[in-house]
Image 1 (cartoon, one colour):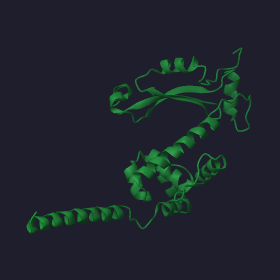
Image 2 (image 1 turned 90 degrees about the vertical axis):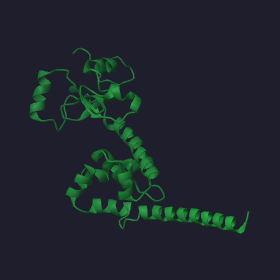
Image 3 (image 1 turned 180 degrees about the vertical axis):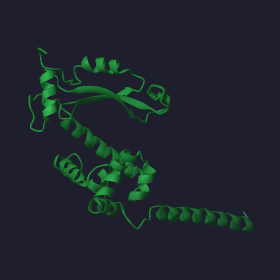
Image 4 (image 1 turned 60 degrees about the vertical axis):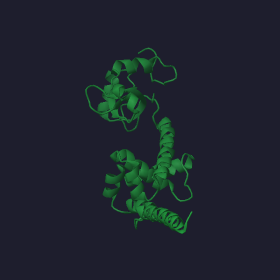
Length: 237
């Protein structure tokens, strides 16, 4: 290799390392907002209550109670750099606005991988919370039941609530999307069966069926599934 070739190789190597350096700088500048994710979360919690509700779709008091409940039950913990409050804030923004992880990444100044991990940590905690609060109620009377609802319970003896199905937006793999395009709608949905008691509290929920599934088919599957926990009316009614 003569001197000219050596110079060309040297220049190519320098150009290569320069490009790597520039990419590194771009990566640093990519998350350089003056307001960190922690600061943004604190702004939501200590700012306007309207802003908190509009951004996270939950009141500030309910958000604080939920954070404390998750911490007390050890369902969610602070990581080295991210608090439970910040994890929940990212989660509510994603589900409340159908936001993409890349958008949340820039708002909270974390990598997409970190946002993805935190989202699924909160999702697992929410599943535990759902199993705790969505349970059958068999009490004959409740203190906060309205007079109208008391009369309905007298008319519909043995009734444990109202049952209905609804379609909830779902994100599924491309090869399964046909089954989830429910009832002429262009987007993908899952069929969810839910029961509310006379206090308008959810006491049962069953999700996962594709959007094209008929409500009766879902009801039969749940009612005959011994592990579903379906709340049948008391014996004799």
